[in-house]
Length: 140
Picture (cartoon, rainbow, N blue to C red):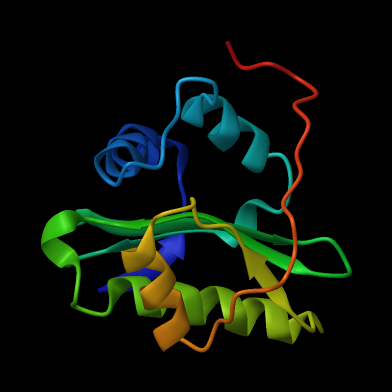
């Protein structure tokens, strides 16, 4: 397995990966998210692929000068438990640390205990915060 920067030709495979992992939502167009990400810190959008070029996982990340963020981390169902997700997280953490980022945040949908457990095994803790959001540009 190798981790490399996302390329536009990866779009269909990554969108399918996110859909299979249950990350997509009707109000959030993943293709628009990809297009937006490619304009801001595209080096923080990476995929993991096997020796045949099959995408095994992907993650978007970034750093705003205060906190790092990870979004859209997903792995193929048949690749879970093989370390793909852990390697993607480690890759992002290393890149963020190299920029002087003191902390990385991420969001997990409420009730997704399996994913919370995954991150806890990697040293992440639940912060006592309330997540607020406001859509500025509707996708649909």
